[in-house]
Each structure stands twice: as C-alpha cells, then as structure tokens.
Amino acid sequence: QQQVKQSPQSLIVQKGGISIINCAYENTAFDYFPWYQQFPGKGPALLIAIRPDVSEKKEGRFTISFNKSAKQFSLHIMDSQPGDSATYFCAAHSGTYKYIFGTGTRLKVLA
Amino acid sequence: SQTIHQWPATLVQPVGSPLSLECTVEGTSNPNLYWYRQAAGRGLQLLFYSVGIGQISSEVPQNLSASRPQDRQFILSSKKLLLSDSGFYLCAWSVGPGSKTQYFGPGTRLLVL
Image (cartoon, rainbow over all chains, first blue to last red; front, top):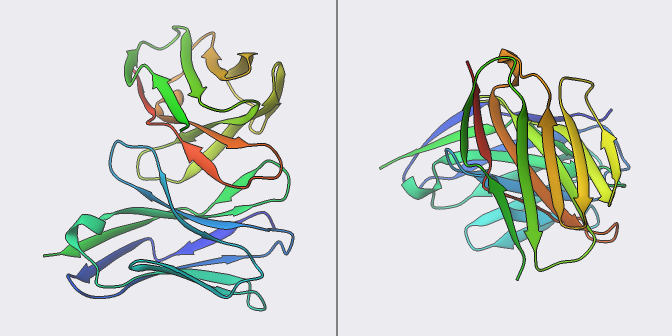
C-alpha cells in the first residue's frame, strides 16, 4: 500500500516526440505527487508537482495528468529534446514526513 | 534562497573503516532532513529522517546511523563499512509539516572496497 509503481523502466523517444511516464499508487492518503529529474552524478531536482484535487498541471513542456479514481498519474514531456535525457522519478507524499519514490524511468531522447 | 550542501562529493573507503557524511542546509530554519541511498541504476531508499535536533527516525535497520547535532546539520555515520554500503547518498530537506516540497543535495558517491 505504500508503494508507487513506475513504468516504463526505460524509454527512447525521437527528438520532438512526446515522452510519457506513468505511476500508480494504492494509498489514498497520499496528498502530493512530485516528479523529479536526475542527471547522472547529480541529485534529483524537482520538476513539477500536483495535488490530488487537480486533474492536470502544466509547466512549459512538462504536464502532469492525475486520475484520482484510477489512482494513477503521469508525466508528459512535449517536444522532447536531447537535453531531457535523464532519469525521472515519480513520488508521493505520505501525509506525515515521508515520501515514497517510484523506481525511476531512464529517458533517452535521440537527436 | 535555500541551499543544501553535502560533503565529501566522492569517497573511497576500505571495508571495515568508519564513515561520516555531512549535510547542511542554509537559508531556512527547522527543516525536516532526510538521508537516502541510491544504488547504481536504482531508485531512492529512505534511510533516516529528522524533524528536529536530536530526533532521528530510522527506516531501514542496517549498518548506518544518523545524527542531527544542530538545526541545519545532518550527519550519516557508520562504525564499520560493508561492501553493500556502496552507493550514492543523498541528503534532502523540506520545510515543516505544512510544506510538501522536498529538495535534494548534490549527493556523495561512496565506494567501499
């Protein structure tokens, strides 16, 4: 119930294409869902986040879609660029002080 | 603005040696502090978190310990390192129970030989 399941494990997209990463959760007490971007050898950086009372949030080329009834949320990267090549993590805030992370998706955008 | 520091950036240690990794946060007061470990190509494993000075919660029983001697300082320690302690160690912070945003430091790469 405390898990966040992330898919796919890896993703290859052509430049200009749409990258889609999905996450699913079980615990309905989760109250905040961030996405992090991590480059090799660096710490994860907060990319975009959403609360469960919102169905979609967009920041530039990055969009989170949230389906509360299905307990799923996804990250869409529009017009994917080679500079977007990184590992992406979804996460869920468990209501107190803890964050549950997905296992990560390694994205490669081909030039 | 807030800044989080970790040192050292890279560390190579022999099996059985002690460990001390330090994390400090600037520009905020009474942050929640976290230690995570990330194995190569893997996700983030929460090791410890702290909501105040001297308050440490352990998530995974193991060879490591954590301490918070000052409000914005978080230390990860081990008395005797194991090969399995190798990994990328990340410190993170968030501000109080009302804020849900968590920010990560640059990380420390630890290799135990």
